[in-house]
Length: 208
Image 1 (cartoon, helix red, strand yellow):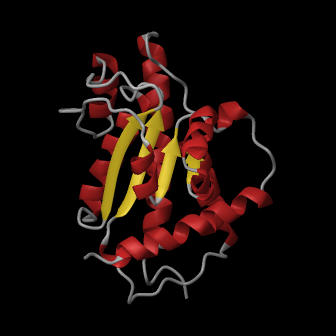
Image 2 (tube, rainbow, N blue to C red):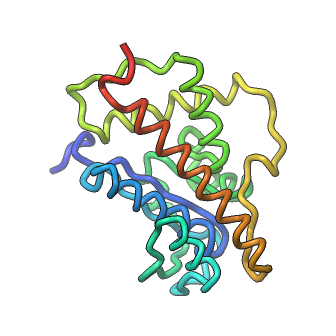
């Protein structure tokens, strides 16, 4: 039987239909996981609160994903269900309404569910504060990442309120190529920030 320390750090990304924003973030995160050599320590998946089950990414979303270094091949939308949330260490949603849906399904997810831009913002705040605890080099990467989630969450009560538009990713579904591009930029920027900060703060030599 596996212990918690042996289970990969599990990230679940959530949007509405699971065909544009959440699979985009999923595939970009997966690309970063491979680049960093984290494949055995981090697992990323996605789902939708009203998924278009079995559908692939639209051509525009797929093209944007490729443009930012992700691989959309083989994606099939799936419905958000409680076990996916229960298994997650970190849930990243595209809108506050998605986060609310996650927490309604699994109330304890209130502690580890964020919108993607919110988590990126709070992670930057944690790094800037210099108050993240030292990382124990003896711990596996999955545990080091797991330990950072409550540290990021603690920043919620320390920052000024943010307008929803700054904490959400625009939904491009059925809209123009320009909106698809703008939405993808939001996803890619937030993903890059999350990966950069978590990578830095999870390194054993990152703090004294």
